[in-house]
Image 1 (spheres, rainbow, N blue to C red):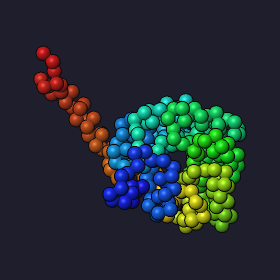
Image 2: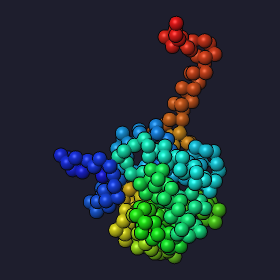
Image 3: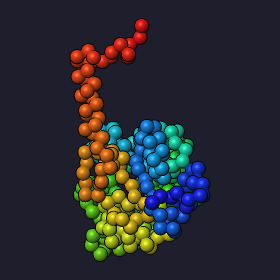
Image 4: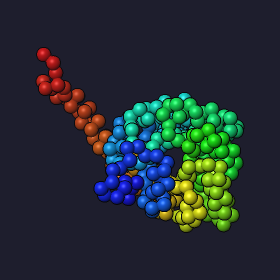
Length: 275
């Protein structure tokens, strides 16, 4: 299901935060995909995807870094602008890069303002109660902010790798407390990553703002995937990933065919040449 209204009622021209909240209230799951360029963004808009996340994962999926901690604020500005200029309907959410908000509310606000000027409709940051002051400052400034709990990629070193979070009772309780703290501070939605399904369901039920799951079971209000994982381009086959297409071998075959036709001089042919 999606945020599309009942038959006979016009769909919203632009997805707003209130549409996500309405979807939660009405039990209608919505979708979010990462996007970093105009072609993916336009395709996902045409498919009806409600939210596009310009994630700091651009560092690992596009720029060749080993970790999202290498993604810079300038990277985020560049790719946020590319996506925002390409679509009109989806809500565009941009990640705050590592090092742009941890020092406090003033830094978070400065960098968030720049992302909004680049075209973001909301920003996302990682962390729980410790970043509540930053969330509060952004909300007071009129900048919608998404939280991110569970496995937080920017903290991959301190979390000892990609590990499911909240499996023990203490961790699950801390996640619920962090989620409520973010909501109280003004967060508009919260991403839950690599969280046991039962814990994610409990957190979702405790909140009035939507949750968006990635490896967090079926009971979150929305679901997000990195688009290259979703489309089979990255080759990543994590437990929580379903590949809805198999683009990598298709792309390889196309490139092999191009190379072969160039080698045998069958491309370009007369129909591709000018007189």
